[in-house]
Length: 507
Image 1 (tube, one colour):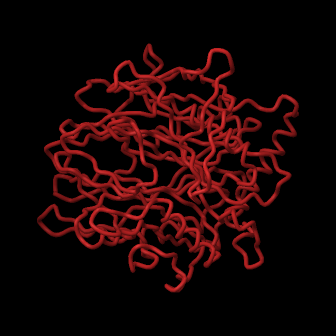
Image 2 (tube, rainbow, N blue to C red):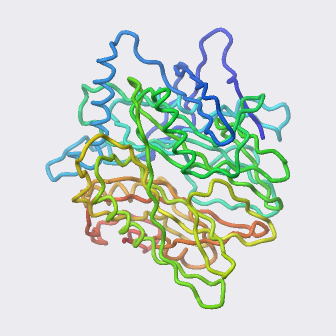
Image 3 (cartoon, rainbow, N blue to C red):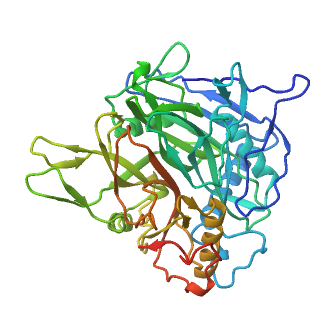
C-alpha cells in the first residue's frame, strides 16, 4: 500500500492547502481559500508489544498567549457548549431562533489532496493529518458553526482519481480495481455563544501491533477490541490526551491478502481492493478530541447485539429488527452511572458458526478475512463509546432512545436523489419536529438495484457478501434521538422527483 509523508507546497511560502473538497450540503457558494498549515505531531514512545496499540497523536499547538488555566476553561466551556448544542440546544425548542441561513444540523466533508503521481495509475494522496489541518482552518473561518460530532467516512473514487461526494451510491466491482479515499465529516450545529473560542480538533488512531522500520504498524490478528481499549487507557495514564474527547469510533483498514504483509500506516487515506483477491479487515480505534489542557481519561464501550432465531438442523438464522437493538441500548444507558456517551456506532460483525451449526457473533474480534469463493455474512451490533467520569450521577435516567434512518429517494432505475437533497429533507424534518439529536452516523447499506425500491433498510441488520459478485453501496444518515417523536405530515415534505414523500422509515 502507498504511504505519503510529505505534502507538496510552494517553496517560497509556508505550506498551504486548498480547501477544494469542503462543500456544505446546503449547496452554498463554494470559495477556494489558501490556508496555513497549523498542525503539529507528537509520537508517543510507548514501548509497544505485539498487542499494544500504536498511537500517533495529531493536533494543533495551543495558543502560547494563554495560560494553562485559560486553556482548560476555554476547552471545557467549548465542550459544554458542544453538548448543549446537541440535546439542550435552544434551536430545538419552540422559542429557539437562528438565522435562516444556518440549519439546525448540517455537515461538511474534507478529502485528502492528490499530491503527485509518477505515472497516472500510481497516485499519492496527502495523509489524514492534512485533512485535520483543512478542517481546523475551516472551523476558524466559519465561527457561526459549532462542531458537534465528527466521523471518518469512505468514498469510492473513479479511474481518474476524482470522486462525486454528492452521489449516494457506488458499485464495488467483482473483477475490476476498486479505489477508495478516507475522509473526515464534521457534523455542525449553530453556534449559540459567539464569545466562545473556535474548537480545534486533534486525533489519534490505535492499532494493535508493533512498529516496523518504516514506522508502520505490523498488525496483530490475535488481539481483541477490549485489548486495544485497555492498552489505550494505559497510554492515557502514562501520557494524558492533550484535550477533551469529542468522539471515539471504530475504523477498518483493508489489505489484500496476496500482499503478504500486515504492515499498516494508520494515517493513510488511499487504498485499493480487488474483488478477485481475499481481503483482510483490521479494526482500529480512532479518538477525536478538542485540543486543550492534557487530561487523564478512561474510555469504555458497551455492545448490544440483535436477537437471533435459528432454524433447527440448518445454518439459517433470522435476525431481529435493528430498532430492538436500539431499545436495548437505551435501557442499558438509563442505569449507568458516571459516564458521558461520545458516540453510538453500528458495527458490522462476522456471523460465525459453531460445530453444532449455531450462529454467533463476536464483536470483540479484531481481524477477519473476506474470501473470494466463500459467502461472508455480517450482522450489525450497536456500540456505545463513553468516557468514564468520577460521579455517582445517572445522566441518562430519563433517556428514551429512538432512531431514524434518512435514506436517499430512489427516483428511477439506479438513479437516486443527491446526498445534498437527502440532507435538505433531514434539515426540514428537524425544523418541523424540533427533536434534538443524541448522536449521528453515516452508514453504507448494501442494496440490490433494479426494482422499485431498496427495501426496508431501517430495520435491516444482516448482509451477505460474495466478493466475486458486484455490489451496490448506498450512503444513508442515521440519527439517534433521546425521546420519541411524531412524523411530520406528508404535505410539508420537500419536493422530490418521486411521490415517496419523506422516503424514510421510523423506529
